[in-house]
Length: 229
Image (cartoon, rainbow, N blue to C red; front, side, top):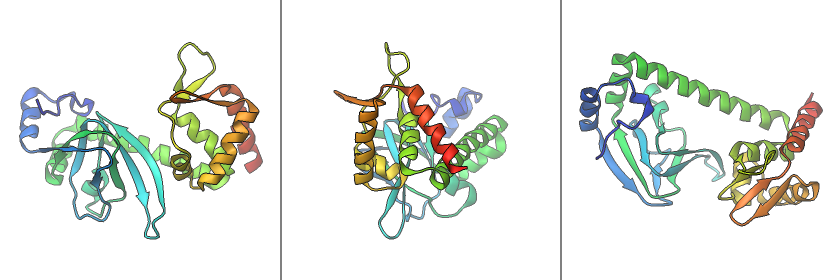
């Protein structure tokens, strides 16, 4: 059944309120690599991802782009345009088969006005996203490319089961994707990945990139910040 009830954002709303919201929204499916939001489109609705995985991309007029983040089921996007009534700030592309609930701008704003718990949750999520962007801005402003790569790999990774002190990224991102995340060229990422392998902090296995010595990698990042002082 198509419903917003699974979203933690609405956990304090009763079933009647959620059903009323469901009836005011529309639902749509997207195929892998399909454009979900074009930053040039004149829309203000908010999209709730019920199934699947999407990528948020900042693209400028020259054609260059930067990967901001990915989102999975249970998350939402498009709220910035809904709140400030300005144009879209980024493109969103489906990475897998997705199903989204599309909430009109007026419904979303009414929800923020009438339900304090939802309002506070949205503010908390936005604050978390701003903190994350501030961290990345600081990295881009002060760190060398290699240190930005180390930071990004750590962000993408998860603890590797059965291997204390190691983390892994699965599926492994392409070098082009990593370059788009940290604002550099693929060739630079390729060179730094090779250096990390020689330093013993990274390895590649079937279906994953493995950060083999997280403590050493963190020390390398700390050294990068020290050099920036």
